[in-house]
Image (cartoon, rainbow, N blue to C red):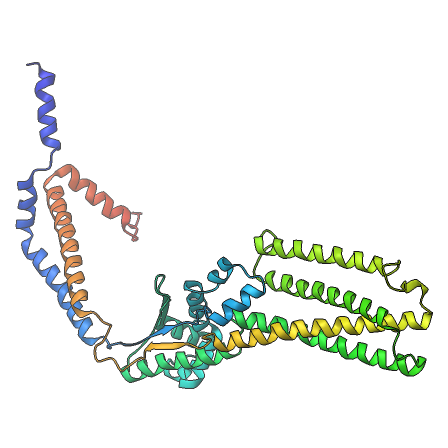
Length: 404
């Protein structure tokens, strides 16, 4: 065996960590390890015993799902696709409720209701809001959609009371918000119905005033029938535009349902254009262009009146359906488990604190034992001892006085 081959195994053996050396280091510093670990455990016990216990009140809620039969019928009649209806319910509805619970509006109401500015010794409102946010926990289960709402406080009775208070304030906020499908549809149709009613009143007054001024009471059955047909088709076009506008509140231009409504609307407009064009030519009735000016104006006013009457009737029907769907829809928060006074604290977790502190103390003591062993070995080596002395001198902030 050559000299190189003999040297390599020796170097490898020197590089390997000897388990006996490690055990020897631990044995030399066993008192330090034991005392340090014990000190960490004792400190953790003292801190755990002196820490103020914190209690948690918890309630479980069922958010409004918006899946009632009335809402489904209304959405189908208005051209809302099923996937859009499903997207507004379930877990997304729960996330919306969680966001409202954590809102500044609800926090301010809770702060004012329980005078938390004084309880948390907050000088500014933001400090009280932060304290409320830190103690509040709200999350929605992705599978069931049930919302878990909890609040922590040093007073167990107050923790339960404040948790239930969050539910009360949430209900008050929801009363002023339109967060369900049926509510959105009802509000949209309500605005359209108001506009149609005003237009109907306006055309009625205009026709009445024209009749008084011109003395014309009827332009003939043929003209009336023609105007009724045009007015009805125009009303259908307007109603289809309302349905399309309602669908666009949650669907994009690429939505299949929106595209279908646009195609149907284009077809109705084409039919209306043909019928209005035929009204100026011979189609079995007296052409409008051949009517006297007074009769022509009367026919136009009558056409507008019939249109607004038909449109108002269609919108009124849709509005009533929306009101029924909204009444059948669960728009209130339903409490599954009301918060009760907790009999066990949630913090501090004393056993966990002591165990973690003991483990941490063990790691610190082991690290310290190897540091002490390194220092002891370095002092025994003159070269390392000189380096340690030089290091101490370099780290020292005191400068030596120069000799004169």
